[in-house]
Length: 188
Length: 420
Image (cartoon, rainbow over all chains, first blue to last red; front, side, top):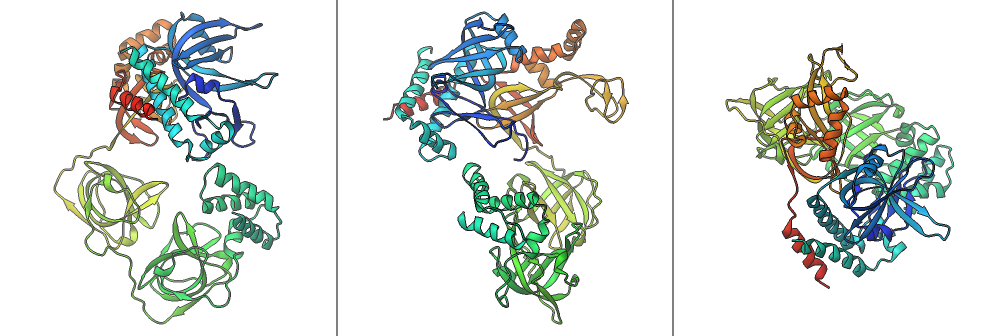
């Protein structure tokens, strides 16, 4: 499809997101979207996560800049919302922790002086949700992660790029998915 | 790919433009490797890019500057022309001439022989005399081209036309027998002869002189666009009446399948009253956003359009009528899908009535509070919506929130990860 299309909100577990460090743009246009390629071959611009907001803190110096920590069965995501994400920031200001939150946002990366790439999410929206929605997300994300793992060997160019860059240990990510799925069983 | 790049470079050289081979390869590679475009498509795209870059008309490239034929091209039947970029000669009868408003094309239509028909394009710069419908000609040194997955032939500077004194029997590729009767939902491929019974749902304005009527016909399974060509010489159909369309052929246009009535087709009015169904689709995913223009809105009392700042694009400033609606964006991680909820479903999922919404907006002196409330309720949750697809939307006629974990899926996935 030519022209604008809406970026799909990818489903990624926190552990995989944290272990991602390959960013690129499609095209050299300054407005071309930036993507993060994950070890299982997800090409992420927008993402959708549901997890537990465990901490929140205003880390801004001049103006308010809120950092939230959202945990899933495999690890945690960092979420930053400031004056340009007023609605999301407002939710962080007002909500109690812990809380189940559903976040739609864009991936964002920061490279430290040591060359480490830190991943975080810049939220477009944060909503307080219930535990059922969180469980739905874990199952959804487990399925999509497994689907990507199954395609890693002979998938498209994104998968090939991931394999080349990360040489991912498939068992490592299967164990991550297993851990997430088992966590769903525990509460039943 | 190397070959393709070299051939593109060669063609541009003939036009007096030198393009570094690396530039061509880079663009091709990008298209093919990165964007997974098929070679033919990639070539097309690269050629168009450089034509634009160097301000060259497409017709110069495509019509004149193909590698000239080596000697006299072999005479073939239309049915034999199955590959692009072959120089051939063809004797046949002009079956149809189509309207053409492209200034670099002089004539376009169908030529046919005993084996079938093929589309031909006679380019302006070929400087050939015009052909007439119903007469027979020998087209020499014409080149086959592929466009939209179909083979057709081009007449260019290398070509010649000679009128023949014979009459050629044409196989118009009519249906071999009576076409099978199908439902609209079954028509999913182009170039199929089918018969269809349905009700005329809409007749559209049509100012194209070679089209008699165009509109939508529907049956229990859905609707499909039909075009009744002038040359078919068929009676007109009426809105709301039911007909049997026999021997109509499907075609693809802009990724959509439609049906065409031509000389082989017939129309018969039938007495049934067919209930037109909508081919409902179902989508499950997270509701990730709600677009502006959702929530409490006002509509024009004349035309029902939604108002922007109290004004209708058609009727200007009007006293609007309140309505509730949601334009939702759903996303299953693989694709996004827009869904449109009318007042009834907005009231249901938003757990608010239209009257309450009006009161709520009045209290806050702001219509936007309704949208905020709806967003807080819906965004970030999983839903399954069902309804007919219209354009890029699903017109929701059922929406269920997904709260129950799919235990079977959970067990399947667990079993999958436990296999070593």
